Length: 347
Image (tube, rainbow, N blue to C red; front, side, top):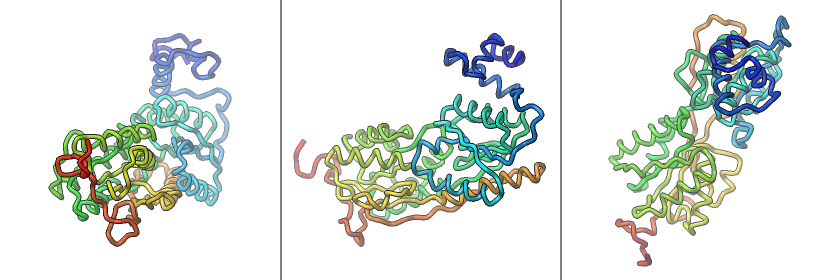
């Protein structure tokens, strides 16, 4: 603990309180201690000398996100098949929570960690490396020398833009996810590239962040649809953005797809129960979970092999929210004219 105290600039007593959670400390102090732990490492004496167990740790925000149930199902299936049990820890995509989750899992003697990384996972990765515990990144790819598995994001979002552009839409907007996440950034890249391919002019207001949450996404959709030139088609960057967008549309009295087409990244259990049924990009979430476990087990058995990076293909699921003429719903035709004014002449 002395090294941690020295690096973080606090007392050994304060370090002890942070590690053992025996007393609350200021948030910035806790952050400094957790960062120091990531740099110098720490091993709880309670597990020193203990033999490793056949347990894999999972650190993710998935447990607060119902759309990740298939991912967790895939992890559990593959872990059981390989003779491992799981220890789960929620991060909520907060850097301090992430580092605390990783340190806690390692203190509980997991042999490897499956991590859905936060926007800044460096401290957690450094700590795991200092303890010689392999990490497999799942769902989100980052610039790190570790095993990783996730979905295609760039081309997949491009498919969504291609689809609505081919229906004649030229005012297309996007509601993106949590800033800083690799998935968010890659999907934005895919949106921009596809817009350029179709010679669709984007403005500063064409991409609005939903902050990875329902309320932020609802606000983003409201901002888009009450602007002077609202889009005729909206691409949502994840399931939270989709739910928020649909809530905003209902609150504003906007009909999807009659007034605005909506296409989404992420399929989930209720996507075909919405009205209209949602046109989406479906991720191979179960396969991502299974592959992550397979990578972890392979790393445990062969610690010196080169890191692998797996990008799995997605599936375009054609339903009704895009407003295609051959669907049950009529094609998406904006109720706003080319100047952004209501077609009925009201203001």
